Each structure stands twice: as structure tokens, then as C-alpha cells.
Amino acid sequence: MRINIKNPADCCGCTACESICTHNAIKMLPDELGFLYPVVDDNLCVDCGLCQRVCKFQDKYEPIDSFDEPDVYGVRHTNEEELKKSQSGGAFWAFAESLLNEGFVIYGVGYGRDFHVIHKRIETIEQCQELRGSKYTQSDLRGIFKEVKSKLQSGERILFTGTPCQVAGLKSYIPQRLQNNLVTIDLVCHAVPSPNIWESYVKWIEHKYSDKVVLTDFRNKKFGWHSHFETFNLSKKKQEIKRSTFRFFFYDHLSVRKSCANCKFTNLKRPGDLTIGDFWGWEKHHTEWNDNKGVSLLLVNTSKGKLLFDKVNSTLLLSIKSNTSDCLQPQLTKPIEINRNQERFTKEFVREGFDYIAKKYADGNIAYKIKQLSNFPLRVVRKIINIIRK
Figure 1: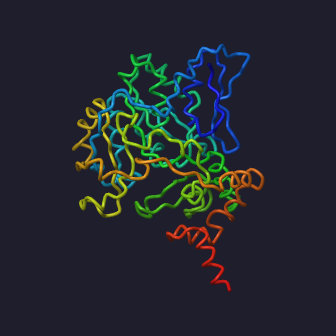
Figure 2: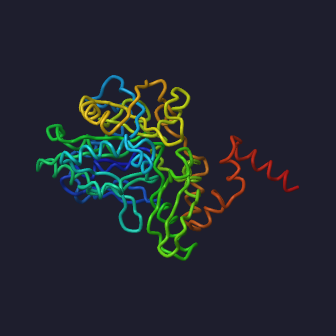
Figure 3: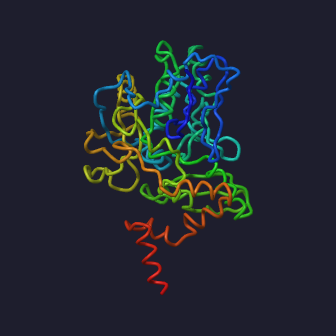
């Protein structure tokens, strides 16, 4: 019995199946949007069934070591400067600081060549700066699970951070006997957008401004915690370019992976020892930090996670106890719905390129601009625009 993905919505691309195959019969290959899927080489496969058994992207997924219900906190980093640099409340940075100082290494999401989003190994606090901030595209995990297993076998202590499907895949792949030195943090994930569209966006910016992008931020906090703008720093020009093109595709669910509409982890049964994310809706239930500087949601899911939180709490984190009813947000209750125009959007991107979809579906289209600023459906916005034009 071998893994056979007939429906793209049935695969999250975590690479556990490729990693566990002892015959190297599985390769993770990208589709037209850059999402990775397993492809089996019939000449090498022996039908051992390991790839099927390791897959945790299943309807009956249950974490084996989590609490019945997580402990819930709103948290902030104690250092105001670190809070400013962080996407929300600085929770990740506090845990990273603590574990790096203890001799842990971190596997988290950074950049490869041409801003290709990848998982990478981090050994110092200076290197860890790259892991800060959300990366609104799916990271490339090829080779990482095997590397993590090898390092655990050699006695290293490791913190792994990623989306819940990535964490679940890793924990399924790593034997239980090796997990004592493994700490995992999963993220409250809305969905993962296309790697190819992101990289095309960067090239589009470079072409548009005739300059090389040297630094980028998917959601720059300098415009406020609740705002969402992509920013780009260029090599020659000193100005910071502010755009919203990519976020249009993301929020409209045009560029996201199909499996995100079939997610098994949009609930409080989390695969990580800890879960972190933006504490959206904080101001509805608490009044302490309503200053638009950001608040991290922290879910403590396991005994290992509690030990780490107890160690960091009050020294690197300020925390306020909350509860599951106050922290619930769409990402913790149900999967997203894929936009009904996604197939057409994908074909147009492949055929026409990034500039075309930017003008048709994003901030080059006045209807989409108004839609993002209102609660009106797109068809209503278009009617309003037509009336104005007349």
C-alpha cells in the first residue's frame, strides 16, 4: 500500500512520507503554484506501507500527549524593543531566547535564495532574527525531517516551529524514543499561500522599481498590529515600498493550498507542545493591552510545554490568564473555504503572469480595493462602481 494523492486537498505537503521512505521512492515535487506533493517511483517502491502509516493528515487525527483542553494566555515580551520587532506579542522570541541560551538549536522558517521560504537550522540569537515575523507562504521542508532526526540521534536538543500540519508530520516521523529532546511550537494558521506567486511577486517588485529587493516583511508592524501591508527595501533606493497586493490573494483565498480547506487542525487539539499566534479579539475580553502594539495568543498543550512556559513566564514574558471561549477565532474553529475562482486564477497566473493577476484580482482592481475596505460582497461592490460611473 503506497501513498497515492488523487485529490490535492488530501495532502498538506509536510514531507513525512518522503522522509520515511527507506528506498528513496518518493520525491516531493512542486505543482504549478509551487506546492509540494509526493510522487512515487514505481521502480523503487516495495509497497511497505510506511508512507501511508506516517501520514497524519487524517480525519481522525488525535495528538497523543496533549491536555484535554489547553491552558490559554495572552502574552507579551517584557522588553519593549523586542515587542516592537515582533509580529504580535513576541512570544516566539521569548521561547527562542530561552532555549538558545540553554544550548538548543531551532528549526524555523526563514529565506533561501531569491526569498524562497524554507525551513532552516538556527544556532545563535543573531541568526534567529531571520525567523521573526510571519511568512505568508508555505515553507519548503525537503530534507529537514531527516536532518532533525539525525541531530536528535546525536543528542542535540531541538525546538521546531511550523504550521500545525508540519508539526504533526514531524512528530509522526520522529520515533517516540527520540522526542524527549524535541520541543515543538505550532502556529495558529489561517492558510498557506503559494510559494510561486510569492516569488513572482518579489520579481515583479524588482522589475517595477528597477532595483533589487534586499529585505521584505510580509506584515510590517510599524503600521500597527492590526494593519497588513507587505514592505520591501530596495538595494539602491532608500525608501521602503509598501504594498498590499499579496494580501488580496491571501484574504480572498485565491492563492492558498487546497488542503487548507480540508485542515485537520483548526481546533484546540493541537500537535505542538505550545501554540502561538495573534490574539485577535483580545480587546473584546480584556482591557490591559489595547494599544495596538500586539498581543500573542499562547496555548499550553502538553506537560513539556507547561515546563517551558513556567520557565519563561515573568522573566521574558508578561502573561494574563484567559480561556478557550475568549480566544476562539475562525482559525481555531473551522477550515477556510477555497475561493470558487481559484482554478481560473491559477490558470491565468500560469498563462499570463503576475502582473495580470495583480491588476485583475488585487490592488490594481478598484472593485477589489473597495471590497477589502467594506463588508460588501464583490458583486455588490461592482454594482456600486457601475452606478458611480454612470
